[in-house]
Image 1 (cartoon, rainbow, N blue to C red):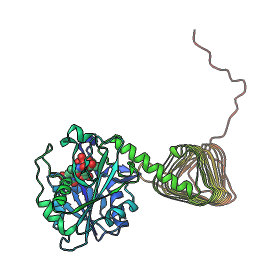
Image 2 (spheres, rainbow, N blue to C red):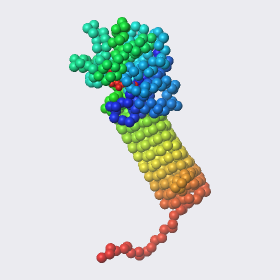
Image 3 (cartoon, rainbow, N blue to C red):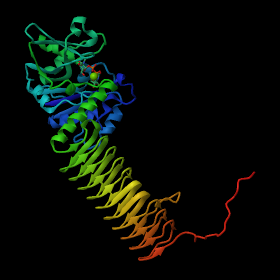
Length: 459
Ligand code: UD1
Ligand code: MG
């Protein structure tokens, strides 16, 4: 079996500069979904017909972790879906008998493997196989024409359909499996004498029928499964459907989601037992949750590993970072790339970390910036502590040993080394290393001026 994916169209109705198949569903371009489908079906070869934004598309899929790169076929002028398949056909083994060519559309991203398997199994040397669906709203789609015996005889596009034909609700999903050894002949016979002056792939149905072939059809499980994305409204509908079906799988696998309609997973999610996710959470990229992880409302977590029993409180952002076992983060913390928060550590409200290694049980409970730091175990970072990692030109590192105490509202000017058990007095500006077991006081001495008179308002 070979797969031909049509992805050359501009997608005028998307009203966008981005090629249509690059618009994302679940955080991945639509074309990535279709390529993944071809891979799961173990297609011998996958041809992708591209035109609009061809370079951009190729680039997006080169050296990505999408497996084998497909065979890119350029359709420089988009003269219709039939013309698009014509461009790919030279690379297809059209001599092989019983070799179905499965045509998928780059803008129909969510069709299931089981549905496609039935489409493929219906295709042989004397039969063409179509995937159709009964649409509640068939507007804009090709209608399936059947004869008095219920046999499919053709497909008519909306723009060419008579008022009567427009009443038909069985529509073409665009997906079909064509016997390879008949493909070239049928494609050669296509004409563009229609409303759109295009070579329609759908016209091969009537041609196959004339050749005495049987047209078999599989019916999609749901209208959403084969929904094509031609505009932003359809993109949003497909996204919702994708999210709901994905969340359903997570629920059945034991994840507690407070409201399945208020979570978005745009990537790969792994989770252990007894994890709870509250409302309005977005998980992006590769996210793994250990067991017993709790994520509060309104959190965004991207490419992160969260350890067993960790507690992420509401409004927290975590990116490219790791959170250790039983650690607590937030509410409203910002964990920027390269942060590794140790087991039982606590990062509290309005604390920002970046490229920060926080040791076991260390705490920064309120209002702090910890950038380019290595903090040992059992440290306490007082409220308002700022690590000055940037001198205006270069970034420098700050190192804290174990059991260091930093008093509130202190400024740690990097490069700086605070040894084990160092103690920084509140309100200090520290720019010199502090030895072990030493109190550092980096502030002007307080003076109390007795009998001081407050200024008076001028008359
Ligand atoms: C097409 C079908 C229609 C079906 C609908 C389902 C045809 C003539 N019509 O209509 O019967 O109901 O899909 O979603 O096949 N493309 C190219 N090159 C071209 C033209 C299109 O690669 O020259 C690609 C597009 O990028 C897209 C796919 O083919 O991925 C479908 O094209 P589109 O213009 O969206 O066709 P529809 O009007 O949706
Ligand atoms: Mg379409």
